[in-house]
Length: 148
Image 1: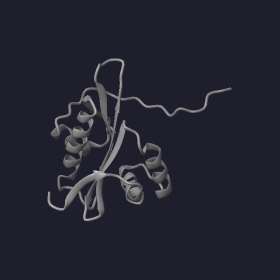
Image 2: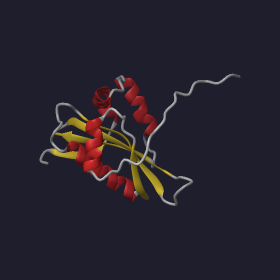
Image 3: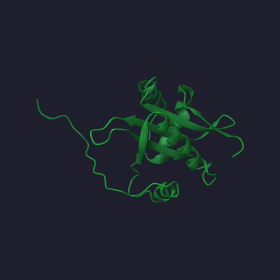
Image 4: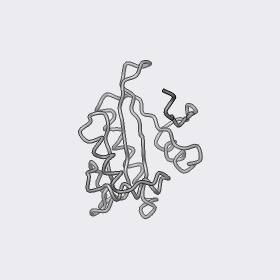
């Protein structure tokens, strides 16, 4: 894939990352994205990579590793993946997934999970092409302050 390189995200990518998050359905301002990047900066258990084409951010992947009670190995997770609508159909998502899997493996993860929204059928097809299996169901709840 000529012209595309995968690199670690930097604070200067905040505006483009905010736009990508909006495409994914999670709108964020550039300032909020900057704060999120700063919060994750320097952590060994999280990484954000971007696909860069001549200085333009074409896509991103967010990753995490964590210990678990049910396995000896660390668990790896793709926590976000999006390719700009201007760059889709060029194999960038697969490139980011492969790069992310190497990062996870190098940090001790032997299992990678992803929890795409049930309505994102295009994402389901991508992950199946990348060798992921549908193994479960997820439930979510917004936590609100409880009394006291």
